[in-house]
View: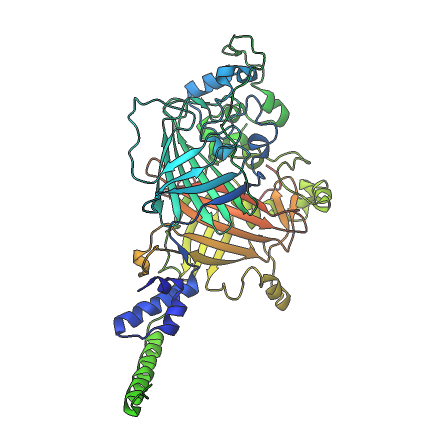
Length: 298
Length: 269
């Protein structure tokens, strides 16, 4: 069956010279499938510009960013919570800490769209990698598709990390390691250098949903999952790089921080909206519906 | 150019007619596969929502006037500003925040089963709601023909509306094959119309009766052997939204129905 046969069972039925009962039955199956399904082809073309609508979680993903202490939805471990509460907004004025908030998970929690393209082997045409362009703060994600292994555990970590990918039908699934320690959310909710990121790219016509699952044995008590949807945009979006170039912002050299129990923003969300402290502080139980019963019992 | 021998033409024609009759006969003998039998992904079972985004809007009732992120039209904003949960309760409208455009975003559990070979049933414990996804109706109820259908028939509008389902199958890049050979990465597309007007957000952010909800249901593997149901929703409601509302949520698969907690609708939490 040649490539033309892939363009729908109906066409196949109309043109074929059926030679056997077996082939007739299989064609009928294809015809039936064409009735009940909209066929797509494996290994979708993700290339192009995908616009972020940012209609969901707008304050945290776009706009002014999250409140200083708002870890709702992030299952922090006790260590993660302690580190997060020690974070002061002044920390991002320091040259060496300005870029900590923009590791690869930022793709799912930041405000920007995606520009995706494919890099191919000039000799064979085979896909070597998919690239998701940098945007202002976040580094380029290079998704290696050529089967190369991840570096050794002792290899250096950097802003971009190391990512490999594999297709499963029309979906691309990726795995990122070797990220530098930073923030999971732009308010100091931490990410250790032991964290890994698993992503799934789910194309639906002109929509693309990414699923980002962050594992962090140091600062998370369970995997943190975020999803974000994009819409294909016909207008070109230039990748901007290099990502996050630190600049002097007048920091004096000391590390701005809050000592344990001294964070003045710890109850800000509770006072403003009545959000329970357990939820503000990112306790895992607050992510589940059962927590509402506990809230009702208060 | 030589003319084909008349006898040869006759034989070929006879063979062609015979093969056509054979194919037609087998079409009659071979029933159209049901949506259930060709399902490329198993959505059935219990799923629990994991509220990692928009916690304050989903786990609590936000204050009146908090419409962050939702591209409301000025007219819709005026409607939202008049939100009165006590009035809704008195009017028996306490399920306004449990309609199809909102219910996937509520913290709760889903129980998905096959109602029959062409209907997928989704029960939602929050609000005791049931959604029915009908397969095989796509030709009748495409997104472009919904309004025409609405004009033709006076059907009752409901919180969950009428949902037309369609498997979005992925075929291998080279060579076609039977369903069993297709990668198990395909998804379910559901288009819902005939909605009773309700709320996108619990604090009275409205959607109207002409809203059209398009959803994509995907199952992806997690990092610890678990499965995740990812629901991408696009709500088109020009009456109330200046642009379609694009969101996504996730549910984790449960081994059983533990935690299943059917609760009635309430106008405010």
